[in-house]
Length: 106
Image (cartoon, rainbow, N blue to C red; front, side):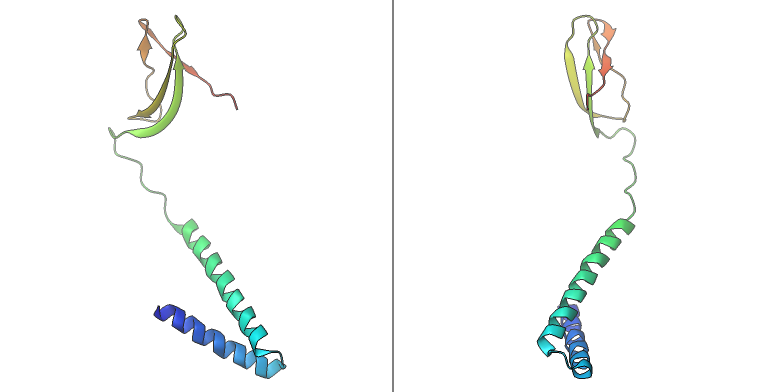
């Protein structure tokens, strides 16, 4: 709340100085200053969001979200795996054989 008050007072002072110095309307200059402050604030927010570090990877043994589809080469049964303990898990077994990874069609 205090930060908004400081920005508001600064905008009023800047608008007053510019309008007195140039002869422009006070309301127009005030709106321009407030719009500029809003654009600057949004830009600053996005720049700060880019600077946040990537979170560390999960510890070994914890489940990760994945989206892999496997197909049995013998009978054609398909399985979608949605969670695994690593990003490249071992294929499940079906009909006593390892299932084959199905590549997604994009």
